[in-house]
Length: 217
Image (cartoon, rainbow, N blue to C red; front, top):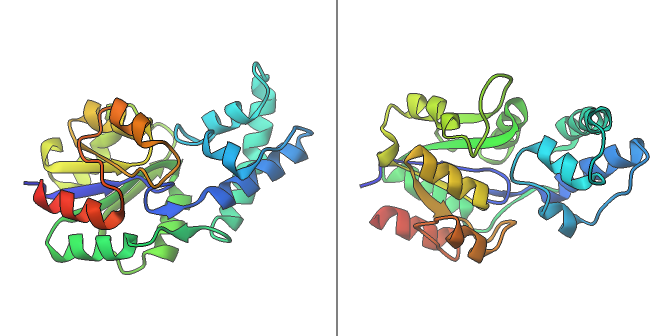
């Protein structure tokens, strides 16, 4: 029986891609680079923003250019991270019911931790998250299973008692490597096929179905 559920943020709890794409395109333009559609930006995210920037730049772009785009992006996104972001239908109800049933909740993202905490505070002020964690210097990022260490410490649980829900193959790979139950969020930025191929155990079609599957597991 599961005792906790930890969630990815982008593409799982929230549709953040309009704000991510806006900040990324403004950063690219500021550095004289081509911009991309919101749809294209969906394919860039999932492995951390540095990886997204590398995907958005021409192949083989120098590290100096990657760093410049990142600097522009981080300053812009920090200030404008909640302009167009929206909660997926049914997510708030899912979180409320999981908490009411006594499951511990958390968030683990590859997004900068201060930004993750700001966004979670804006959209989920009443959710009793045990931890809201993101990228900080010196901490491994998903899919490195070591990224689970501070989460499990905060929850006070072994990995096998925890489900990790995310929308990407990176999330499923991470959950499996960390010993957590991989739960897919196919309403996000990656296909159901990718999530299944990467090892998703729970594959609901909506947050309401995810709630049912998590409670039954």
